[in-house]
Every structure is written in structure tokens, then in C-alpha cells.
Image 1 (tube, rainbow, N blue to C red):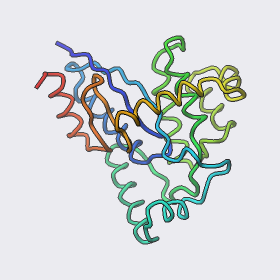
Image 2 (cartoon, helix red, strand yellow; image 1 turned 135 degrees about the vertical axis):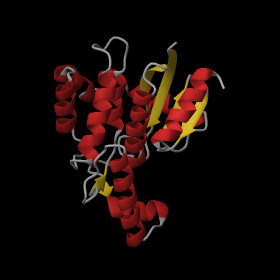
Image 3 (cartoon, rainbow, N blue to C red; image 1 turned 30 degrees about the vertical axis):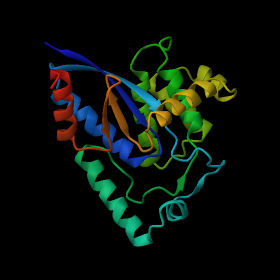
Image 4 (cartoon, rainbow, N blue to C red; image 1 turned 120 degrees about the horizontal axis):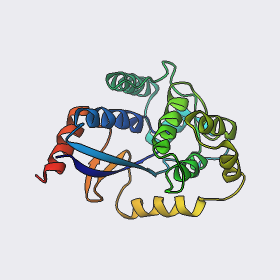
Amino acid sequence: MTTPLRIDFVSDVSCPWCAIGLSALEMALQRLAGEVAAELHFQPFELNPGMPPGGQDIAEHITEKYGSTPEQQAQMRETIRSRGAEVGFTFSKDGRDRIYNTFDAHRLLHWAGAPTTRPAGLQRALKRALLEAYFTHGGGPESHELLLRLVGEVGLDPARARAILDSDEYALEVRERERHYTDAGINSVPAIIVNEKYLISGGQPVETFEQALRQIARGD
């Protein structure tokens, strides 16, 4: 018997571990085909909600935020590339140049996941496209030109997306979802919440996701 699971994937499109975590989760779900039927919902979380237009140099930002040295940053980039390769996600060898504001990307993701937005499944496609645009190809997720191109590539309506970007539509809804998760104690991402009850934190290996989801499905 196949067990239905609701999975809320709380993340930011500027978070490398979110790209790793999503890829590992998807691989785990492939292994669990026939055992679980997962319904994925992508929820907003901004790592840098106050980031101004144009963003900030990534090395400068990480130094200010975490106090890490250039050597430590280089080692972390290599670790991230290696972990990404293990789950089929490609990080640019040169890394990211800048960190950007991602609020507009989250507004479009909210729209893509709305029940009235059809066909279903395009929220997941847009999420992956945003992650790949930033981490693999070096695009800036604050760019409306990039966002509209990705919307069209995954099969959503660019004209409707442009209307959203030219207004404040879905801003309140995204802020409410962000507050909901921070109020629930989520302060780092990815945070994977299963059946609105079980939390799996971080960009875990495929096997960890597989084991946890199987246990949840069985009611262990």
C-alpha cells in the first residue's frame, strides 16, 4: 500500500544546502516509489531579507556574517560542490560572485504553488530552475528578466508573472508564511516538515531521507 505524505520544504533559493537537500530528497523519493506518494510544497525562508538591490559580494558577505577566512570559504565551496555532485546537482566551479535578495523569487514560487495555478507540479519545476540558475549558471535571482525567463521555460505564464512582479501581489502571503515557520522555531534551512509534524533538518544524505520517510510512512 502506498502511503501519502505531505512534505513542506522550507528553504531559500540562495541556500546551497537547500539545493543539495532537495536533490537528495528527490532521490530518496525515487527509491521509495510504490511505498510513499509525496506531495511537495515549497515554503519561503529568506536568509538575507534585508539585502539591498544589487546584492553584496559573496566573500565579503560570508566574512561579515560568519567571520570565516578565505581558506575556510574555499574549503566549504569544495565541500558543497562534492556533496552536490553526489546527488546530481552541479555547482559552478568558480562559485557565486554575489548574494542577492530573493523575495520576488519567493512571490513567484508562492504563485506557482497556488491551487488555482495549473498545471500542477510547476512550483517544483520553478524551484529547481531557480536553484540551477543561481548555483550552476551564476544568474542573479533578483533579476526580473531572469525570473520571467525561468517562468516561461517551466511552462508558467510570463505575462501573469510580470504583473505579479510589477505589483505587491503575494507579498503579504509570503511574509505570513515566513513568520509562520520562524515562529515555529525554524531558523536555518533547509527544513523539511513531513505531515506538518516531523522535522528533518539540513541537506541530509539520500539514505537519511529514505530511512526517515520510510519510518514516518510506517508510523514507527
